Image: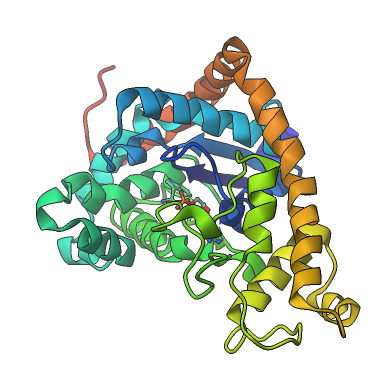
Length: 338
Ligand code: AMP
Ligand code: TRP
């Protein structure tokens, strides 16, 4: 048995909806993607079909998809270790998506809180059907690869639950076909908060980007955002999410980026002020993100290299996905072409 076959599978995806990933994506999910490729047979995709649920200028979508790939490489995804690909390169995602739609209850899909939030924000007339079926396509992304683990942030937990339900339902109706995946969510960093509004999660769709640290922003901008983070009027540097959400979020970020424990940081900063913490955290953030940004910019200068990585990843992903799809069709009684 080759090592690939004996390793557990991991799969995750990220949407190319913006020019840059943010610190929440990095700490909540992408860092785990990088770590897991050493121990798992990893499949990572840029989910461009999911991004179609938001109306985007075609040129921008194209650019952002390549920028997403460049950022993943810059963050440390190694394309010889992991299968890195673009979702739309593997048609089996849509094909399995349809099959799963046919075993998903309307009410079940209607309970997805992300759909409710997003559709409420844009209003019924502007909400597309694709947004409603979005989590079912996500389930197809995962089940196609027989993934054991799915590294994501807290906001994706419900979608992974739906994936498990659909996988189990299919297996019990049509025979063992899918591996049932677990969400891989790291407690401490599963929900990084907005620096200006530390009671809301850091999000690409925030009303203002002032509290969102973007990987592709210039170092001065990110340093300034950290230094102007919203904090309370007290002085003590203490982790207390309920009463001191701003400081607690800064400590979480500091701890995640340096490996120092929160307790250690509280001790180091005892007697010091919020200004000291923010200034030093700004240096830490810039120290981590600047090389990532530079590396992503380098990858973007060589689109032929990106294309070749994606071609190889798409082929590898495509053959795994095609095999699962054949099993699915056959289990359901669809006649093979022969
Ligand atoms: P999205 O930006 O919604 O495409 O999310 C990409 C990945 O980052 C998903 O696994 C999310 O769960 C994760 N994520 C997004 N925002 C945050 C956040 N504020 N804190 C932690 N993880 C996040
Ligand atoms: N819905 C996920 C998000 O917004 C993106 C996603 C699509 C995904 N397909 C996936 C995540 C498969 C994990 C596995 O972040």
